[in-house]
Every structure is written in C-alpha cells, then in structure tokens.
Image 1 (cartoon, rainbow, N blue to C red):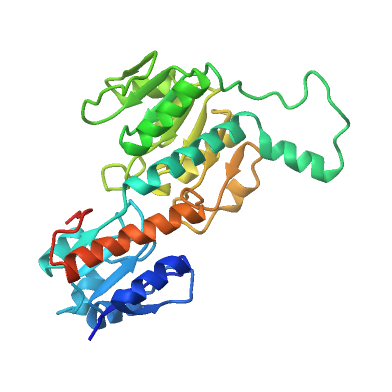
Image 2 (spheres, helix red, strand yellow):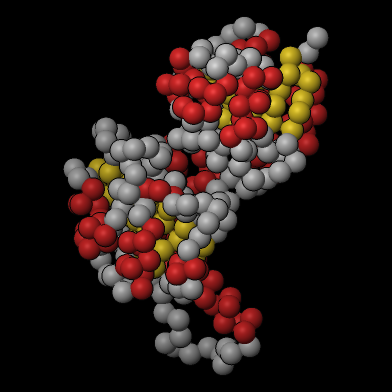
Length: 322
C-alpha cells in the first residue's frame, strides 16, 4: 500500500503526477494558508506533508496532534520560519526545504524591484494609462540611475550573493554587504563587507534585505534604520515582511526620509495597509519571488525528492533542516 502524502496548496501538475507514482496524494484546492485544524488533521493522518509559507506549524499545532503519523514535512520554499523546528524534532518529524532552486529567480526579482523603484516604472505606467501624459520633457519623472549606485546587501547568503553579482557585474554597482559571519566577496569588483549594519545603511544608495525571518531579524529595519539612510536611498525587501517594521516604513516614505521602496513581502501578509497602497513612491508585488513555472516545478520536484529519499529509500533527505 502506498504511503499518504498531503499537499497544502495547489502546485504544478507535473509534480503532482510524479508524486502520484509513489504516494496516495491529497491536495487542498485553496491557495490560502492552511488552518490549524487542517494541519493537525494532516499530521495525524498522512505520512508526509508538502507545506508552504503561511502554514503555521506552531508548537500548538504539533501539541494538538499529540502522536502524529507524519514523519516528514517538506517545505515548498527556502524559508522555514513558519515551522517550529524544536517541536517537530521532539516528535521525531524531519523538516526539509528547497534552497538552491529558488536563488536565481529571487535574485532576478530583486533586480526587477531595484529597477522599478529606482526608475519609477510603476508610476510611469500609471501615468500613460491615465491618459494624462503630455509627452517627453527633460525634467519628467526623474529617478535614480542604477548603474554606478552603491548597492547594500543585508544578508550575504545564496540569494544575497546572487543579487550582489547581478548588481556588480551587470550594472557596475559598488557593493557593501553586511553578514553576521565573514564571507568572501565572490569575485566581485569594488565590494567589501562592512563591520556593522549602520555602516551599510549610511553609505548605500540601494539597500536590499536578504535575510531569513527569525526572532533575531524581526523589525531589524525600523525608524532608527531609516534615520541613518540617505534621503535619496531606496529599500528593497524580497526576504520576509516582518524584518521591516511596516508602520515605520510608511512614515519614512510619507516624510520622504527615503526616496522609495520595492516590496515583494509584507509584515502581515497578505494584508497590506491602505496607507502603503496609497503611496506613489513604493512598488508593491504579490510575493512573486519564485513565480515562474519552471522554478516552481523544480521546487516541487525537490520537495518530493526529500520525501522519497527519507520515506521510501530510507536515506537522509538531501535538504534536511532538522
């Protein structure tokens, strides 16, 4: 008899068909985060779960499940701050993720946000669509010239390094990067690791948040951070929404303490404050970091490979977190 696999959100058909070769598959139709009672039911009745961001596998969920049937939770994505790793470990549930396949897609989107926010692309699109555009003029919608601007990367992991390479080698941007541990500059030109976050905030023109969500990074960027930034600086967040204190960002954008921002994630996602939506100097995307079919297929296949390795091949999953 096949083992039972629960998938919390719709994923690409190719991945589902592959999964059905190995498992009896149940997949939710809803694209919304899985509710607590659904997660508890899944833990009690399925051998493996493919979960995603927003599925809050909290201590309360694990405690309510008591003696779960689930042996492995394979996270569809790289970030796992929605999973209580200690609670999973206590119940002997393995947790995996899909790290490498998301790197380039997320870095590409970061560059898209950099260009959109710097060159005021969304504002320009709205102007043309409104019918109010009167034609080219030398002082129209002046933005930030990306090439040559100093790029600041907060968090120099896989994605941070990929963003740094794109900016440095593609746009000749000097790079400053802040990381808790020492890392190499990966062959970048005119780049170096700064000793403190303040050094980066003070000196960078475009600042990209590329850190995992955790209690240590919660509200890392707040009003004090914005006070240190240049009034001409632009903030990009493609990591986790709660790293940036959203209410402080809104004030900074309203007061023009910084020039602009580009966001793909939000503190209370999917809720986005009207005060943020109403601002012209911010680009807002609906968490599109890895939203390309080929990438999502790779993520799904890797999530599945982790489960197959552990449950069927009785090997350590290739992307074991805990």
